[in-house]
Amino acid sequence: MAKKRIIETNEGIQGELTVEIFNNFARNMRDKGWNNVDSIIKVGITKGNVLEIGPGPGYVGLEWLKRSPDATLTGCEISRNMIRLAEKNVHDYGFESRAKYVEGNCMQMPLPNSSFDAVFSNGSLHEWEDPIKVFNEIDRVLKPGGLFCVTDMRRDVSPIIKWMIYASTKPKEIRPGFLSSLNAAYTILEITNFLSRSNLKDADIQSAFFGLCISGKKG
Ligand SMILES: C[S@@+](CC[C@H](N)C(=O)[O-])C[C@H]1O[C@@H](n2cnc3c(N)ncnc32)[C@H](O)[C@@H]1O
Image 1 (cartoon, rainbow, N blue to C red):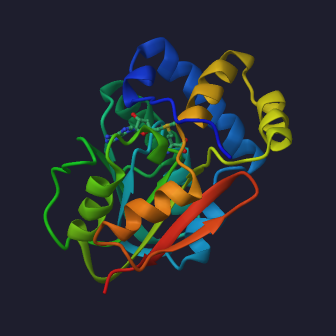
Image 2 (image 1 turned 45 degrees about the vertical axis):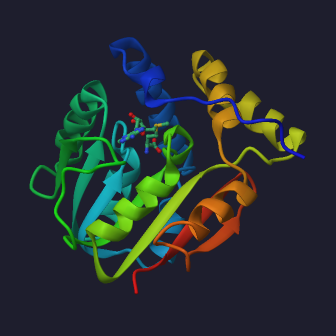
């Protein structure tokens, strides 16, 4: 049975220094190919006008754009400092004409109804205070038939896997933050319950080696 959840909000990574350390961590994950881009593509999200929730420094979306030449990307991110980093990274990837970021809280996104062909998010769910509100927001901004894919870590992993990931997390300064994120992550059971009370009730939930993947299509 998983330990009780310990809340972590986005406030933990707002500062300029923490954001810079997170950027190094996310770049490392990108370089190892551990960023769930395969899951997003496997769900069928490969083209159109696509929204990323909680892009942080942007590597997941930018790597996905690299493999999805017929797509454009909008990121909805709550932290101004993260957006600053993501915009710099967009420039380094040469994707200025295909990616942009809006500052906003995903529980109430400053984006119109039925405006996206697909929505994805990686590693942000554990920071959402009210996942049901965000699931309903995903449903609201998606066009009919639009696809979604939300990936994150899960709290109900085995202690051995937890230790393996902890020990391979770099830079070392991020390890305490990694543990607090894992302690804040939702279990498969909790997510199943949230989805059943949201407008995404037909979503599929897959339990992965270290995390979870929620996916589906708006009816
Ligand atoms: C752990 S980072 C993951 C960043 C990136 N998706 C990745 O996989 O590397 C989580 C991101 O979600 C953002 N976030 C957390 N809560 C949010 C909210 N309510 N609305 C929008 N963004 C949020 C944080 O500011 C942060 O950039």
